Length: 331
Image 1 (spheres, rainbow, N blue to C red):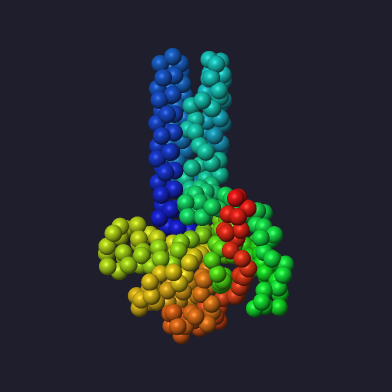
Image 2: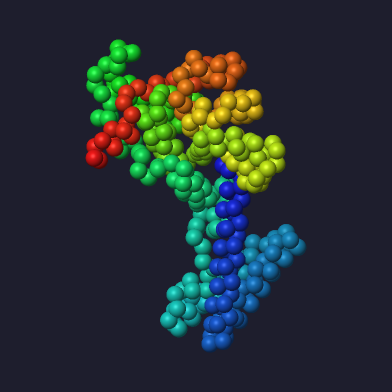
C-alpha cells in the first residue's frame, strides 16, 4: 500500500506532540505527589540508579547474570512499593505512568520497524474525511445504490435493458472494491450525465479506503489545475505539489468528469503524464467521463486513447438521467 508521505509525517508529528503532552502531565503528577508522598521521589531515584548500574555491569563485566538478576529483583520490589504507596493514598496504581493511546507502538508510530496500525487507521480516517469533502461517501454506498432507477425496457440502441447493464456495472464495481489489492485492474466508466458513474466511484472510494488503501479523487479540471500550479509556480505551489504526489502515488486514483476541461495541448500532456506514471507502476485508476471511447483519440491523442482502451475495463452506462427522475419524484 502507498501512503501519502505528507499525511503520514503530519500524523507522526501529532503523535510526538501528544507524547510530549502526556509526559508533561505525568511529570506534573509526579511533582505534586512528591510534596505529599516524599518516598515516591526516593523510589524514582533508586529505580534510575538500578537501571544505570545494570547498564554499567552489562558493558564492563563478562559474568553478569547474578548481578543483573539481583538488580531486576530490586527493581520489581521498588515498583511494587510504588504501586502500594499510590493505592494507600487513594490513587490508581498506574497514576504516575505516562499515558499512551496505542499499547502496540506506545504512540511512537512504528511497531517492529513497520508503520503501526494506529497510524494507518488515522490515515484512513483522514483520507475518508478528505474524500467526504469531495464525494458524498457517507450516503453513496453499495448498500444504497438503487437499480430501480434504471428501465427494464431495452434501449433503442442496445439489445439489453439499462437495468441489466447497470446490474452488471454494479457487480463489477463491487468486485473491484472487494478484491482491490489482490489483482490489478483499471476502470473506464462512460456514458451520459446522471447515470450513476460518480455514485459508483464514490462507493468504490469508500470501500477501498475502509480496507486501508489510499484513495485520491478529484475532477479532471481540478487535477489539471494542480499541474498548472506546479509547472508555472502559481497559486499554492506547496499544496499543489502535495496533491500531485497523491495523484501519482495513491493506491487508487479516481478521475471524475474527464473531458469537461477545456481542450488544450497542456491538458493532454498532463493526462499522458499521469496515466503513464500509474500504468508503469501498475497502480489502479478509474476514469469517469461523458465521452464515448471513440471520442478519446479525437479529444486527446492516439497514444492516450490507446492506453485507456488497451488498459481499462470499459463499463458503459445508459438510461434516463437519475437526477431528473429524483427531482420528479420529489414534486
